[in-house]
Image 1: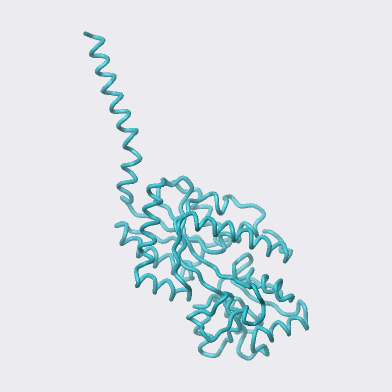
Image 2: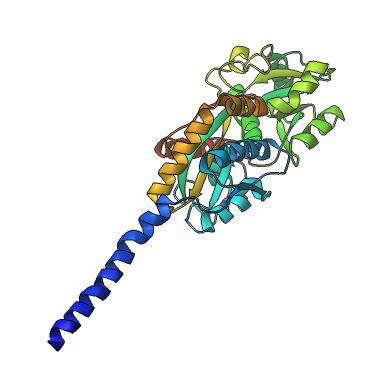
Amino acid sequence: MLWMKRLAAAIFLLGIFLGTGLTAHPASAETYPSRPIRLLHGFAAGGAADTLSRIVADGLSKKLGQPIIVEAKPGAGGNIAADAIAKAAPDGYTLGLVTGAHAISAATYKSLAYQPAESFEMISTLVYYALVIAVRNDYPAKSLGDLITIAKEKPGALSFGSVGFGSTHHLAGELLNATAGVEIVHVPYRGDSQSITALLGGEVPVIVGTPVLLAPQIQSGAIRGLAVTSPTRTALLPDVPTVQEAGIKGYDVRTWAGLLAPKGTPPAIMATLNAATLEVLRDPDIKQRLETAVGGEVRGSSPAEMKALIETEITKWTGVVERAKLPKI
């Protein structure tokens, strides 16, 4: 009879072991989230990425039933934050908001501590928006065509400001150089505010900037918007023509923002986050706030679509960097 007691005890212990193994992970996914979530981004507080993060965090917090704490980790074009996200525990409690600069980093850095496409689980894209090529209102160029004519007459004599080396703003200017056959020298600044101040102060004659931040200056008459970088005009600046309207065929630069999580985050949690994000983006109030924040267009996606976007952008910007012969950081 002793062997029967031992067998019964063994079966009991095995049942506990198997039960724990079978239920631990599904239970954690089913109860997710059960505590606050961090949302990291890699840009200065008060900028476009920070504003987008806070709007999305507000919507997701209501859908998921937990606070979402936005944390800025600025520096290195968003790479510091991206590295922190990649190294975080893959449990759904650390998320990241990235922009078009996330893909550009693969083209402008010699090496990264993470892979922009492979080190993350993608959640969804959020919004797409164009940039603006602008001059001070008293500058001789009244159109992008005028600016190109001036630049061709004096190769290397003109300069354009951007929010920093390797930013979408910077590479939008380099793509203009390549497609228009001009040589306008890049001058990096630390954010839109500094580049706008530099333009108004006469440090640079041209900048590539964010529409929502340039719009008040354009509307007041202090700055002239020469062109937006998207194929179609933006609702925020309907009177500013596109680069393509100026005769630069095929020119298309739109930056974007999207959400991601560390690689290995469980599929059930990722499905929850994707569904919640798409639901948030359908909310009319959130949609309006996001589009107003950047003068862009809300557009959600599947994880696969966001990953494909990043891979396509890496290829595109690698080509621009190589053509411009830009030194890698």
